[in-house]
Amino acid sequence: MPPEHLSGRGGDPKDELRLKFRGKPENVVAFFDAVCEEVRELMAQLGIRKFNDLVGRTDLLEVAPATQFSESIQSKVASLQLDKFALAGR
Image (cartoon, rainbow, N blue to C red; front, side, top):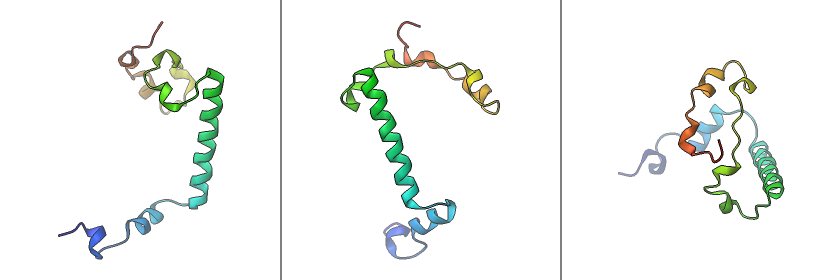
């Protein structure tokens, strides 16, 4: 038996998602366009041409102090174990 979303029974998953999230699809596209543009700018500053060239480059990561985040998530941020990333030079 096919999954419910393919069987013609039940609700359309797209309709269910639209009920959960306000806003327009165009806004999501605009958001990701802005994210892509910012990533391109950061990569240019670092002299990186391809996104794949970032893979494994933990030397480019910077650790921000937990106090830089909102109080509601500071304890979560402080509990992150960043040593798993083997941050070079830290």
